[in-house]
Image (cartoon, rainbow, N blue to C red; front, top):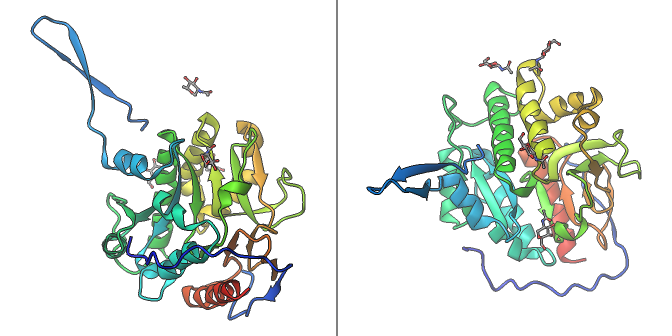
Length: 311
Ligand SMILES: *[C@@H]1O[C@H](CO)[C@@H](O)[C@H](O)[C@H]1NC(C)=O
Ligand SMILES: *[C@@H]1O[C@H](CO)[C@@H](O)[C@H](O)[C@H]1NC(C)=O
Ligand SMILES: *[C@@H]1O[C@H](CO)[C@@H](O)[C@H](O)[C@H]1NC(C)=O
Ligand SMILES: *[C@@H]1O[C@H](CO)[C@@H](O)[C@H](O)[C@H]1NC(C)=O
């Protein structure tokens, strides 16, 4: 890791609850490849050889915890500049309580060469998403055709990870990790635990407004089916991003139809800018939702991390 080991995890004494107000800066609402081939030897007895593991399997095995759980973040060119989102994201793992070790379980999926190179330079766990027929090497603007293609490619990829039997936290890069989320992500029969922009206090109420920028998903037939349908919905989702497409599916009852148990995460712990006050004694992640543009997100998240450090 290029990250300095000198920044030791701080033993943080939480002095009550600290209420802070984020400077709002232009922010507003807004295949299961377990395949084998057979070779026959001269005596006609069959020897079974495992196919060589593909790059993705190697990456997933290398990064995941013993129980096949990992963290996945998608990295693109816009996030890798110096003093940019990637640096801030990594700094949050350094500054967070008990979060530093999670970096080794974090797989960065780069969608372009620039971000892959930067990721490799930092000696992070990097996987280059090969994108047939789509070139994400140019700057990708929010909701441009390239952005939407990239988004759907990401959905396809995340479904593939489930198909291979891995659980993961998907995290956007504009999320600060201040405490270890796994501690609050105990799951008892839930298939999917989703962060919320707005949380109404009932974790199992589908009228909570979810955000696909942070979630924990368990691999099983139901979640694989959900991701397949989500990806297939792209043709009927013109002008929608993946979150809006999933929202539409939810309204049409996909969770019930597939028998998925979904829990919505309490914004007291998994918080963001849609709610302005946070309790640093409890907060686990801070997402710059309800905040548009890399620059504005950076400004606000930097302010939050700054406040966290001196709390
Ligand atoms: C895997 O282990 C971690 C660490 O103990 C735990 O937090 C996580 O929930 C486990 N994953 C699953 C899918 O149970
Ligand atoms: C998932 O589906 C496969 C094939 O459709 C089936 O063999 C398997 O038993 C299912 N697993 C679970 C946990 O339902
Ligand atoms: C979606 O559209 C693409 C090309 O536009 C096509 O290849 C694909 O089969 C379509 N998928 C579905 C599920 O209709
Ligand atoms: C797209 O929408 C049409 C009309 O609502 C529907 O018949 C079709 O099944 C949808 N396709 C997908 C892939 O959801």
